[in-house]
Every structure is written in structure tokens, then in C-alpha cells.
Image 1 (tube, rainbow, N blue to C red):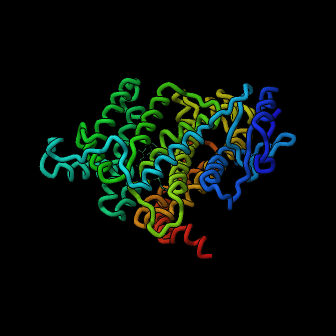
Image 2 (image 1 turned 90 degrees about the vertical axis):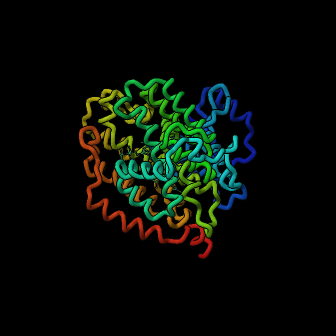
Image 3 (image 1 turned 120 degrees about the vertical axis):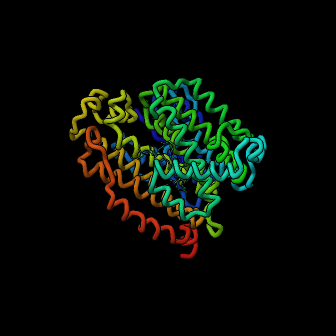
Length: 423
Ligand SMILES: CC(C)=CCC/C(C)=C/CC/C(C)=C/CC/C(C)=C/[C@@H]1[C@@H](COP(=O)(O)OP(=O)(O)O)[C@]1(C)CC/C=C(\C)CC/C=C(\C)CCC=C(C)C
């Protein structure tokens, strides 16, 4: 039996009650209503973030249970032994808070970054410029639309985003590229050592040098970079995800981290009234939304590599097995399952939208463009009648081109936080 406790309705709820219920073998989850005027801003934000995890699957509530589609959010679960289980969302939110604090103080991470000079790197004259130019070329080659979008940013920001992009792309290539089958955990350990070195001003090659220079100019923390490598490690050993909590953590590692790396470079609009934490949460949400979309688009392709990224418990609840995924037949069960997954991904996009307008104006266009284009993949999955086994959902050139002026128009809007306060 599932027991749901509404903390807002029963503020005096004692821990003992929770422990007793859990000890009696009930699955207990604590919920808290999101109260917009909650004086504790930090907490209320956390509840919003946690909401996206469940509020989408349209699961019928059990007796006495709050419908998951209602604005009631799950945050903390308690094991049958009565121990509070910290969810992935809470762990990730702590990273968000740390990143936001860093940006607010405009501090560099410890140990202090030593600015890179061409001499230390033995780069040729103009070496750093060449390094950044090469990053730009790589970016243009792999992600043309996004590259175009960066052209609106200031030169310093654009170059920094290219350097981050290249590091992420190279990290991803380790497990997803042509040499992926030879990659071992110790190769990832060596990649992490290189990361440590470039963060302390000792880059290994010119592409690392560009990133090393970037982190000396912007308040970028090493943790999201380390976490991305951790995501690649997990990809080496893991081919199944028990539940959304596990999947969420994976999505944070490989994509949410990109959002956290990018905010200090993109900058928050000086006129924005949004909290730094909320902007980071939106950036994280965009990464999660993109990765969930990527997973939904690539179900068939991943299955052919023996991988299923979809939450196993949700598949079982929908009456689906791994075999069904490997067989790749679109059934009504599959369509229904996919509808829930798409709905969840869209909720993360919505959460992200709230943050884009808070970014500095020149940074908004590429973010809007990537958001609109990636979200359209979900529409294409629907248009393919949920056949993501043998058909690749693909956004055509015309739609892509149309998204660019729309993104540009959206990037001119003033920050949401200002619009709300002016009403
Ligand atoms: C403007 C913008 C989008 C900036 C981000 C630039 C950047 C540093 C991108 C790095 C992307 C990368 C190579 C990540 C490695 C891991 C990976 C492959 C993740 C998947 C991306 C898509 O990859 P791929 O190119 O293989 O996709 P296709 O197969 O070609 O479709 C991911 C799905 C995730 C990428 C995640 C983001 C782009 C996060 C974006 C979030 C922000 C930029 C924060 C914006 C801020 C606010 C406040 C909303």
C-alpha cells in the first residue's frame, strides 16, 4: 500500500509517524504543496524542481493518494527501514545551490585558477586565438545551428562557449565515438586527471588550453565537468535504469551539467529579478529535457546496442518488457507509455523556458533556438505515431529555419521576472 503524507496539510507530522508507517512495510512518500508565497524561497524552489519527476505519468492515484498530476510534489522517500532516502533531485539541487553561490560571489573555485599563458603551454604566438578558432570550427562542424546562434554573443562569451562545447563533445566521444569500444574506466580516470590539470592552468593540448583560459575568465566550477565524466563512467557499466530517479541522475550527469557549465558564461541579465538559483535550475532543466528527448528519439538505436534508458519500473507498470523494446513493435501500450514520457520531457522544457529570458540578452538566442529545435523532436515522435524503434524523429530543414526567427523574437522579450513584477 502506498501512503502519501501531505506536509503542508499536516505540518506537525512527526518523523516517528513516518518511520512507523515505513516500518509497517508501506511505501511512504512525503509531499509538500508548492506555495508561491512561501517565505522560504530556497525550499519552495526545491519543491518545484522535484515536482517534475512524477507529475506527468498520469498514474491513477491509489486510495487516499494525491493524483500525481496535481501540483503536489514528491520530495523525500522513506525506506521500509525508516531511513530517509535522498533523491537524485535533491543531490543535484545541492550542486545547483553551490554553482549559484559561486556565481553570486563571482569567485573562482579552489584551488585558485592560474591564468594560462602561451609560454607555459608552449603555444605558438597567437596560440590561444588559434585554439579558440579551432574550437569554433569543431562546433560549426558538429552543431551548425547552435554555432550560428553563438554568433550573436559577445566574442569573449562565444569563444568560451565553444571551448566548453568542445570539451563536452570530446568527453562524449570517449564513450560514444569510433573508439568507444576500447574505452575503459582508467581512460576516463586519465581524462579526469587532464581536467584537474587544465583547471590548475596546466592544459595538455590546445583545445584544453582554450578551456583553461575560459575558466580563468569566468566563475566556472569544476564539479559539473567532473560529474559529466562520472556520467560517462556510468554509461560504461550500466545498461538499465531501475526508475526515473536513476535516469534523472544520468541525465544530470551527461546533460544537466552542460547547463550548469554554461550559465556563468552566458550571464544573467543585469535587470533580471530572478534568483541565481532559479536560473541554474532552469539551465539544469533544459539539459534534462534535451537528454530525455534524445533518449526518447533513440530508443531503437540504443536497443540495438543492448541499451534501454527508459525507467524499468515505468515500463513494467505499462505492461512492457525489455523484449517488447527489442522487438520494436508499436502497440497501444507503447503509445500510452510514450505519451507519459513525452509529457514529462515537455514539463522540463517548460521549467527551462522560465529561465531563458533571465539570461543576458545576447545569450538568449542560441538557447531559445536549441530549446525550440530539440523540443520539436518530441512533436516528430508523435507525428511518427510513436515509432521510435525504426524511424528517427527528425526536424526538417524548413522547420529548423523557421525556429530561428521565432527564437530571435523570443530573445528580445524582457526577463519574465520583470514582466511579473510590472503587472
Ligand atoms: C546555447 C547552448 C545550447 C549551449 C550549450 C553548449 C554546449 C556546451 C553544448 C555541449 C553539448 C554536448 C556535446 C554535450 C555532451 C553530452 C551530450 C552528447 C549531450 C546531449 C546533447 C545533444 O547531443 P548531440 O549533439 O549528440 O545530439 P544529436 O544526436 O546531434 O541530436 C544533449 C542532449 C544535451 C545537451 C545539453 C544542453 C545543450 C544543455 C543546454 C542548457 C543550457 C545551455 C543552459 C541554458 C540556460 C537556461 C537558463 C535555460
